[in-house]
Image 1 (cartoon, rainbow, N blue to C red):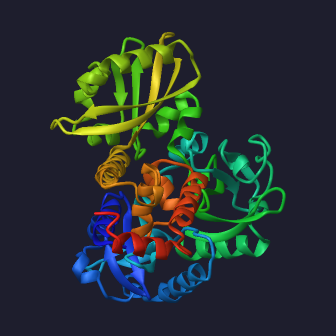
Image 2 (image 1 turned 45 degrees about the vertical axis):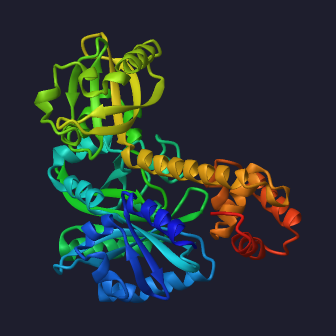
Length: 458
């Protein structure tokens, strides 16, 4: 890969919100700034070290085995590990890895996501009996309250049934053992409860109603409700992440229970556009305290050029109650910096009989920056090709074919070329075939080498 292309490729990794590590032959080649912040190691300190050094000893063999599976062609699936930070503390992470061509060689690209927010959310389930009842009714994580003596499910959230391929109302009255791979799992979990008092983040195999097996992360906490000993069970499907927008599909009462402590930006806005409430996380992301936003016009936190469109979108949302609407706009933080957000909104009946809009926001700033980086690279390539075309269309190559030839010479695959130029994979492959035919080249490598040697490109 030419140096400029490699630097551009690495820039995309640096903009990634999650940690990114490039691994070659089991040694760390590079880590991005997000992973530097997560691990406490600088990129220079990490470079050249065995990747196993960064996880706890008991997980190193599993990490090596997973890397071997990926090198053998296994699909990318998330796995959980504990990385050892530079100060000796442990950080739970989810790692997804895949192979990629980088710098002229095949590297293992690993994306690391901090699991602490999710685990902190499950920790909140153990606060009190009253809180358990409320969360079972409203939490986006599938929950169940079962009798300790025989495992009979007494209460369940609306999400539990669908997680296991059952109707939402077909869970209460079943036994918790129905959701484990076998009865031995329940006995093993009960033994842990008896020994430690609870079960935290325990992985086990479960099964759908049709018998399909899958993995769940489960936490158990004993409690006493209405004088009866019960187990509070929290399930998390580690093969598919729950989306925060699920909370918007619940009733206003359920939504309010989860509102304040949820690590997503939530707002409620009146039909006149006044902020009725904002959760702590949402206010923090904008640099405010919640009280500084409540009572103000929601337009105050949007960019001046977007306010008119925001007003129109809110008006359209209010005309279609209970229908979900989405839009993307720029918000302005208290300090003046901009934040691109994707908002999912829904108009519902307010307690006073009027209408209000429930809004969940997702920070899209990094994605927008990545898109801008791709656009800048595309424009730079097109300017280069224009200069090359002015010297004459060698081999009868069209403008687009010459652009593709530049990328072929840079070692890009047809899939990468399609993404960079904003064309389909089939079109990219067709252009590549045309180039080889016109140049009489037997391979992509020959075409690229000849283009460079013959001065067809800068």
